[in-house]
Structure formats: C-alpha cells, structure tokens
Length: 539
Image (cartoon, rainbow, N blue to C red):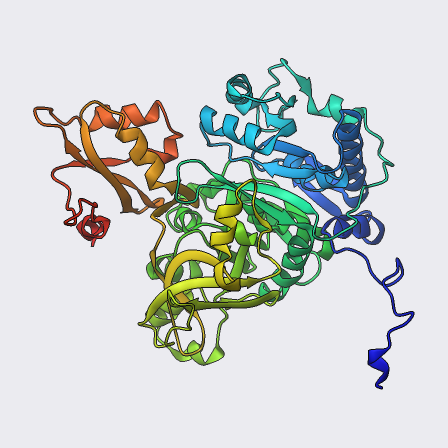
C-alpha cells in the first residue's frame, strides 16, 4: 500500500489550514507596512496602522449596533474612504457587505433593502434623501441609517441620522476581527440587472475574492507599492476586488469621488497613480480632455478596461498619451474581470490598427480560473476560427455562490457545470475570445448595466404606446445608450420629449432612452419584435 493511501494524522489544523479571505491582506499589511500610506483622499492620509484601526472600529461599532455574523450591511457611497473601510470593516464583523449603486431609483433601492434584509446602511449625505425615501417604501424592517458626510468634497452633513465618525468613535480600535470559519462563507452581496427589471442578488464568498486578489497582480504585472486610483465604482463588483487586493502589495488606494479627466490627470501627476480600471468611457474622457484639464507625467499608467468592448481607435489614441490599456472581461457573477487580453510579443510587428483590434478582444482566462471558453447550445466547444459563435461559459473559484433567494435562476446559470454568461462570442485559434453580441439584451452604458426589459415595461405604461423595444445605440461618450423604438396607438401623436420625461419620473436617469424613434416595429409571424432588425439602424 502506498503511503498516500494512509493519511492518518495528516489532518487540517490551525497550523496548516486557514480559510482563505481577503481580510488577511489588511491584517498582514498593518504588521508589514505599518507606516506606508494605505488610503488617500484629498488631504486625508491614512497609514496602514490607521486604516486597520478604523476598520476595527467600524467592525466593533457594527457589532454594538446589533449586527451579528451573517447579517447584511449595505452602503450607498461613492468612492470615498468610508466605502473602502466598509470593504474590510463589514466582513470583519462577520457580516455580508452589500454595496448599492448610488444611481438607482428609490423603488429599486427599497427592493434591495428588503430583499437583502439590510440591518445597517452607510449612506453619503448627497444620497441620504433618496435613501430615506427608499426606507419609507420598504415592506420589511428598516435598517439603521448612518450618514457619511464628505467635507473634502463639500458635501455637508444633513444631520438627520447618526454621522459616520460618531458611529465609528464608539467602536474599539483593538476589536478582534471575526474571521470566517469556512472560506465558502458569504462575503458580499451585489445586485445585477440581469434580463428582468428586478435585480438579482449575487452572493460572493471569501475564497473567490481572495483568489481574485491573487490572480489580478499576475495579470496586471504588479509589483510592490502600486498607487491605485478608484475609478471603477466600489459598488460595481466591489471595484473588481481591487480594494481588497492593494494591501497585499503594500500599495495605496487613492479615492476619486467624481470621475473627470481633470481629476484623473491630477491624481496621476500629484499622487503618482500607477494603476486604475475603468470602462471605455473613461478612456474617451482622457483622449478628449481639454488642454487645461491635462497634466504631464513621466511614467506609464497601467489600465484595465471592461464593461463594453473599447473601440480600436480609442485604444490607439490613448496609447500615445502614456497609458497601457489591457482589455478584461467579467460579470458581477464572476466578481468582475476573469479574462484578459494576454499580449503575444509576436504581435508587436503588426500595424497599429491590427494591434488595437487584438487589444479589443476579451482574451483568455485569468490564472485563478479553471476554464473559460465558448460553447454551443449543446455544451460543445465551438470551432476556434474567429467566426463560429457560441456562448462564453465560465468555471472557477471566482464564480458566485448563486443568486440570493432564487434557486431557479441559480440552477439555470450553472447548467452543465459552467456559469452561463449569456454573452455570445467567437474564439480564435489561440483560445482568445471576442464578444460578438449579447444574448441577454443588456445595454452597457458607461459601465452601467441597463435592462431593456425594465425600460420597456415603463414605456408600455404610457397612454400613447402600443408596443416598444429598447436597444443599444452607439454613443461617443458612454459607449452605448438606450434608444426606444415605439409603435403608437391608433390616433395618437408621438412626442419624444414627453416619453423621455415620463421615463425619468420612474427610472434612474442613466436608464432612460436618449432617443425615441416612432414607427411600426418589425415582428415575426408570432408577433415577437425583431430587435436585431432595429439594431441594424445603427450599423
């Protein structure tokens, strides 16, 4: 009998097995990099010692407020220090972090509060009125609301609720963190639009987030002490897990509340920013920045871009400005990016336009993923010829646990042992993938997911509308925006401005159509609207 068949005494113990969690990164950084800058925002500078103490206070304060392991703590915050602190402080209390999109409407926020059963919500003063309306609209028990004013950005405290610093001050800076007993424990709850109007709650675990933080530096070729700018909202896939990752490298997180070309160039010049992620709209901002908004810098800035395929022309233009852009791809269900456009040095000799076209591919799997490929409807590998279409399917540790309270949707998403992205793509001989179309009619505008079904359902409530269909329309600034095609009721006259105003009363602004086209809609023999015909309008 080989010795491997007898493992008596070879057990998991506290000495040789610790559940993986990104919390470990900050705990270590406080010991290894105590005096290095960890978090920067304006004139606020936190060392890792300070950062760790404030996170501990937050975890302690949440426990004192009645939060117990497994409870949900929500945030309605832009990219400010409190949002970064919540990424560690909430799970350090054993709770699940639910970062909510600050651009959502009252009804959707109320639904998320109810569905996730939030016990506490940290909310920026700017969004406190919307938050309180959502609380009033809830069906279940209301959460404790903690107001987070932002003096640096000139957002004063309204004063209706306990303020963040007062809440924090009650906590113990030496609080013993509640680390997970099992790395499968839930770490975060993120809501995604999906193909229906109501968002689905994506549940992420400690193990997947930890492995994401380990795989990303390999792909991004990161070394110690990067200076990372928070352009991707921390409510989008937890900022692609970057805030959890940076302490591992002893780096600095530079918070950016309002995204503008001037703010990005200033951060690069003044803070020495080396890395940031962003949707293609961010690249367009930098390329088209006014001369007075630009700043000189003498180093290459590494950029991950995702959210929508960037235009090759944009990639070519931004490369001349000192930015090295790498296309990545992922979904909320995969904790953010899980594929990379891995560069082959053989492509260096290609003309610039062909290099940019290759850089626009979604690429190959990140190192922590098991398998990401393109398969047919029968779960067979498509021919890797750059022409045959199939669906991107994903398998690996950085895939969600499932959808909260929705076992049917979870089972459908995991059919056949892979997560189904519902994104149609082609695959090239080297294995790299490129999205060809979206199977799920999601419009990605400036990195925001917009459900066409949700917009259509609102439009159908207008008395003039007989039928409607919403599709993506190309936009120089946002990448794509919603365009509504409307078939009117007999005898009614179309008023595009009135229809857009109607949607603005019921939806977040970014979800509203930017253009309305009137006319009879193309349909199949069974009456189904042919959206592919409508998309041809923009080709």
